[in-house]
Length: 367
Ligand SMILES: Nc1ncnc2c1ncn2[C@@H]1O[C@H](COP(=O)(O)OP(=O)(O)OP(=O)(O)O)[C@@H](O)[C@H]1O
Ligand SMILES: [Mg+2]
Image 1 (cartoon, rainbow, N blue to C red):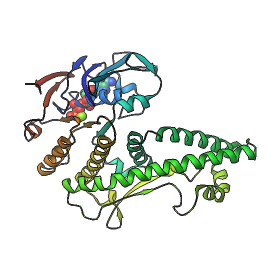
Image 2 (cartoon, helix red, strand yellow):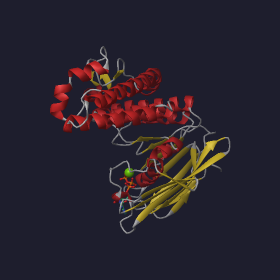
Image 3 (cartoon, protein in one colour):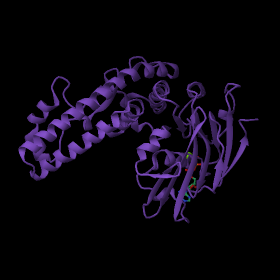
Image 4 (cartoon, rainbow, N blue to C red):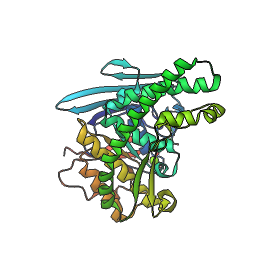
């Protein structure tokens, strides 16, 4: 899928604007502070109903305005189109509209507009808390396995029940046993989807990484959140006294993680910043390939400040891989000379110059 039109109002410093992006490569260039990242924020808002910089939405709304809106027309393939709209105000009110109907869950947006973000914070996927890697993993599982969301909702509900019981001890033992069975069944289901996904992702990731970087011996493995040789019910029973002491459940899929290791070390500890960026790009591009294979349509890439940390050879290799995905890509950069050349002649490339919040299209992909 791709965005054929996007209308942005009162997002950060951007002047109200309607853009007709290329279905493939879009380059936004301009000086520091001109508003390039803000355009990616607007697309992110449309796909996830939240900002990528902060959990709070306040900073996304233009200082002088009470609210911001983003509308997008999404091409779903075979001529069908979806119209998405996001409205957010300073009081925290959020409205999500799909084809004129109000919807309550951002999961529906995510389903229509699968987004992959690569930005200067991306190294956190390697260095940061396990939660970031779980989000990465679950993004992929959500988009290739439609039963995942239901299992995940069941898990959340059963976990809430168990944690509340651990803290307050107010549930009778029969009901608690029933909730524990529900917890274990949802956990096994989630684990099976995640495991199958990682198995499919690994070879694609390794192939993609090999095209970006000579890095022999990097391994990607999955930890399910509890002992691989024991049933979760057994682990929960054994850890009950400690869980009660802490007031929450320690083992389970809510503790899953991905591990990237190189020469016996956590990869994040030994890779350079540029190498980290390329490893993250390989992971995210591999996810895009899996979505392309299994789901109608494709995902959209937001690549903020693509050239940073990368030398010419790696920059070119990354651009080539993004181009070969046949997805819509929004790339920002300060110096557009670095990205102007090198695209295949049949690839539609649109260029946008951003200056003090104003966006002008400088090269039309239809020319
Ligand atoms: N809520 C807001 N209202 C108005 N302006 C804002 C708001 N939040 C941020 N800005 C300003 O918007 C401008 C554009 O920021 P943005 O991050 O999009 O720039 P950029 O073009 O990506 O710059 P860089 O090349 O440095 O990454 C900045 O000058 C910033 O101070
Ligand atoms: Mg920026």
